[in-house]
Length: 237
Image (cartoon, rainbow, N blue to C red; front, side):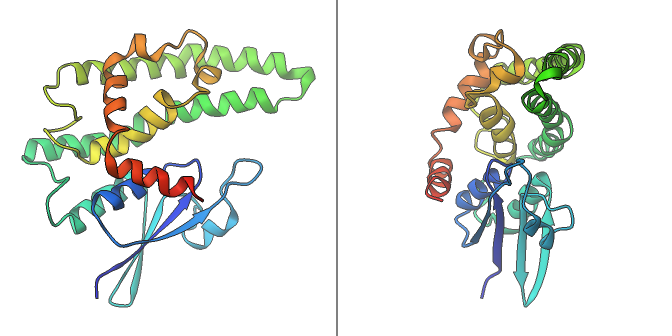
């Protein structure tokens, strides 16, 4: 009997990438779903799975023993190393393996925190009481302009230039890899496919004009059959 894999999936979270990966690897898995609270927080039930109460988290039950694997980059690396028997997503060269590993760390360590900060500042304005809303907006706008948006633009330019030099449609090698999967959330869900992005990044944030290569990559990735299947699965929840 094979390993049992349980994905603890939270709506509007980074866990959708793991669902996509499980579909890409054609693995049998159990999907346990959770809904955010009215305050947009993860429910307390997730703390029973992992002390931090975050998602994604997977449980792997092997020979009667359960292991909890957390952190998106770690989960992606773990699943590919242990279950990609057909080498579908395994990089072809050592250089490509190093590059995928780089993006697994870069995405969560550098890119995603900038987007989270813009999101939090946007919510701060929405949640501020009317008498101080103008002041909160002024302060967060200055913070975004001075650091978060400036750094985000630098990172997006870096990624757009990187893709412009690629001879394939993927971030690493000539096929889909963990790099494309982990970058799906910040570049597609948070940016190119996010109708509210201008609320947090400003009205002058024209993605297709500023970052055409990211948008071209995004358009192609959204046509990946297994991603479509994963998105359709959660749309029914």
